[in-house]
Picture 1 (cartoon, rainbow, N blue to C red):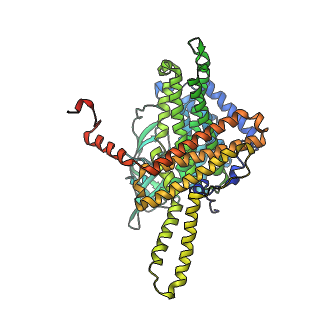
Picture 2 (spheres, one colour):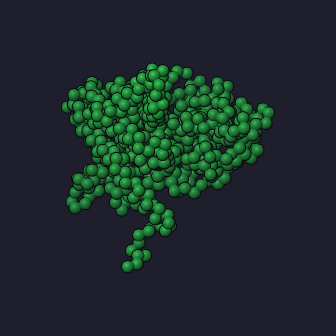
Picture 3 (cartoon, rainbow, N blue to C red):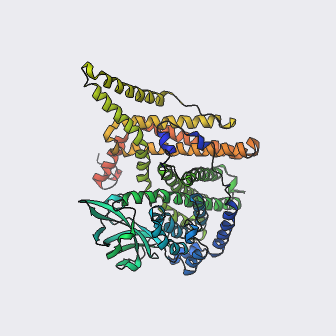
Length: 587
């Protein structure tokens, strides 16, 4: 396997912009595009005819004919190689399919998404040829439905805290324990399960492929959920389940790395689904705003409604740009895309949630009523911010992953500085001089981050300000990262509020980069400014707003009034609620 190319966003954290990919936005124009469009239209037609989200939500179950339809449409085998009976979609085509499906029903989208994005993804990414030949044909047809079993009652975002045990006994393992909130758990016959085993005296996590026919596999009742009610979510129990050694994924002890690798790609599926959700409610709003009358006009003529619709459109455009720029990195095969995928999941799920809220506001009282369907979309959409890594955890992941390289450089510079101070004698002068050279380079790079703004060239002439904003945003991200490293040192891990701000700067910087890339491609390849005037103005609107948010977060990193946040929270904890009630105050 070739060494991965450096992450685009890791470079940005170091004030380095790889502008080559930005000059080549990955528009949909592959040789397979016509074939995909035919399948897309076929899926869309079936969903229009067959999906009844209100009924699914009420009965809390997808009907058997829907599951059968998903099988017949090939929706369980989208990513599986053709050799095993699948469609062999790349990440881009797969994400586009989830985008389409989620415009119609979130529970259907989750059923096929959990099956492929995470349920069988371990087999797809880490399985041997023998393992794939054994299971993939049945997974492709939906004869076997897959589920991902990581979360436990005592281990959610802290995956390392799992308790399920695996004990090696000759040619098999014995697994005991339970897994919580398993999507597809009530339907699945194939589970990617993570359990702890003792290796060389240490507890390590190993990934297993477990099938229901191995014995000892059962599940509890369907969870009673706020939304996604027709999606199966249950607790899974393994009791003395015998798993053959050949069903280990990767190597024993590699389970944590495998779980993170699976989730990295799974997050792009969530971003695609979020995009479909925004498109769905935007369609609702565009129709409603033109039909609904108030004060003698349709409400779409009012500026405040127009602003809401424009913001929803901007969110869709930004998310589409970020998601498919990232899916192209995945499809290129040798890029590190972990930060970018996390950014897409965080921004996408929050943008979808905000769009649904705006849609409900546009619909007013009608939006609150069951008949209009928005209250169901509101309930269905809330889970996105929570699962496959809560957005709070992912913000820490974005920030800490981006900080790794600059922090390593800073640590090395500090070690060199300390060692130079230990060279009073002339015999070690050459060693000292070499270290001074390293320190000088580090110091120069730090000064460059804080003073020099790189000029970006080669973008369309109408995008000069936008390219300048990207260069400025990159400098702000790099200097903010350096500031945090120098200020907090080893204590930075505990500065979660500051890390969250840094992540927000990274998210908006990536948004600026991908939107700039897209609009550059539009202007240079699709007829220039006059033909694409409206799209250019939308891109400028998105970039301008993103840069304003970056400035705001950078200011808060500098002034840091987090002590007020901490004291306010401490008072609420101490009083078990609101600590400043007028009712409780004595004069």
